[in-house]
Length: 370
Image (tube, rainbow, N blue to C red; front, side, top):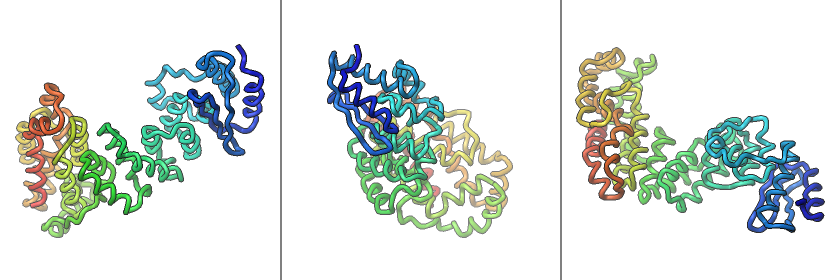
C-alpha cells in the first residue's frame, strides 16, 4: 500500500531540502526533519494501520538515503553498540528516522562534533550523551559542554549507580564544567556516594578538597624527583600520592567507602583504586583473598624489582608507603567474587559482609597520610 497522496507529496518535497537528520514520532504520527534551511515537520495521514504506515514512511526515507527500502537492521543491537558503523555513512544513518541507527552513529569511533549535534537533535538521551562524550572530537567541540550540562541536570533522575558514575565521569572531562558546577556536584556526592567514584575516575589529580601535601612531601620530592623524571614509576606514584592532590584522592576514597549503595559501586571503586596504583605492581598471583594479597605485597616489597630497589636505595623510609600502595593495587573485581558470588545483598547488609575488604583500604590510606 502506498502513502497517502498528501504525505507522499510533502515527504518527497522534504527530501529535496538538504536533509541533515530525521526523527519519527510514532505515537503522534509526525515526521520531524532537520534541514539546511532549519527544522520542519510533516503530520502523517495514515491510510492503514499506524505501524504499517510508519514502515512505509521509513522505507521511503531509506530508499532516498541508502538506495534500498530495507532500512536499518534494528535487530543488530549488540553490533550497533560495538561501534562498527562505517564512518563514511554516518550522515546517511541519521536520516532514516530509526532510533537504532542513531545509536549506531553515537557509538561510531569516527563521530564528529557536527554529527553529534544532529544525533543529539534526533535522540537526546543520557546514554547517548555519555557515549558521545567518549569521542575527543565531541569533547573538544561546542557539543561537549551541552552534553555535560544535560548529564549533570539529569543526574538526580538516574536510578542505576553505574549510570551515575558514568555520567559524572563523562561530565567532568576538562573544559566541560565550571569550577562552581564541579563544587556543586561534589557537595551532592555526600548524599550520593556513587558520585565520588565518578570523581575518582574523571579527575584523580584535580579533586575538590583542602588537603595539604604529606608532611614528608618536600623531603621525598627532593630525593625522588630525579628518579621520577627518569621514568621510575613507583617513584612517580609515591610523589603523586604524597602531593596535596594525592591526599585529596585518599580522602575521596574514604568518603566513597562510607555508604556504597550496591555491589556495582563497590566493584567500580575497587577497579578505580587498582587503576590508580597499578604502576607500583604488575599484578598478584592471588587476587581473591585480601590476606594473601597483603602477604604477597610484603614479599614483593622485600624482594623488590629494580625500580622499587632504586626508590628504597634513595629513600629507605619509603618502604611502608610502597607496601601500602602495593596492597591497594591488588584491589580488583576478582577480590569481590567470594562475597558477591554468594549474595546479592545491598546497603548496610552488603557493607557488613565486605568489611574485611574495606577496612584494609582505610588502613593503607591511613599509612599514606601518616
